[in-house]
Length: 266
Image (cartoon, rainbow, N blue to C red; front, side, top):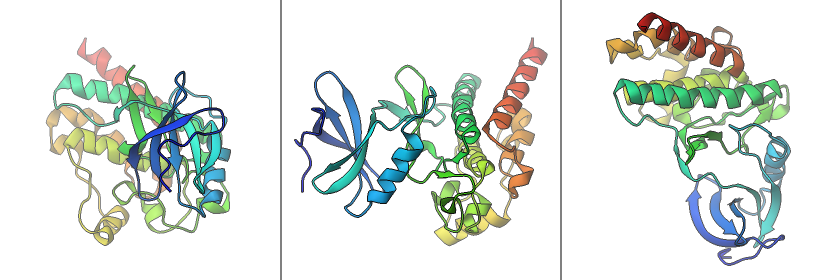
């Protein structure tokens, strides 16, 4: 059934499709006063929708996009959430100004993860498509259907996530922990600094590389990035216990590195 034109409870009307992923489609919905994003899954995914709502319905943080409500439209379950008009978190240049702007935004990503981790939640699918910058320049983490609470059955036993950003433990089907999100964030940082993700190839090749290979340092692409070498290496360490333990620790470390560098450059 085509959902375009359907009216939701509360008066929101579905206007047009604005995106799609492997499983869900995202639509723009409005009642004239409010604008929202509607994410619909195929019929039979009701448990997934309820799970996302339970994780994200009460998120109160500037860098996280909460879920407002669950709906069923044309037999398809979904969630309603604030629309984040903007772009993916990627670097927009190779000069020092663009790099610093990216690091500012990256701190926002880590701040959002810090809040999630403090609440005992792991996102499990950190990637540029799920980290948006709105028109005001605010970073917002979206999509919590793969998120899991620490210690829950959902956090272990299955290979979930996006292969280019998959932590080694996720690649093994082991339990996801906050450091798993930091590995994915580290892949994003590496790609922003070097213009490519650490590992490419077939799915099997990339999964193996995440488990066994170390990426080149940022300074091997640009000597001016040497101040981030140790930080990037720790974010991308193979064992979760060798990484920063959570978003708050990774954020504090990055701020210390950037602050110390600013002092030295005066």
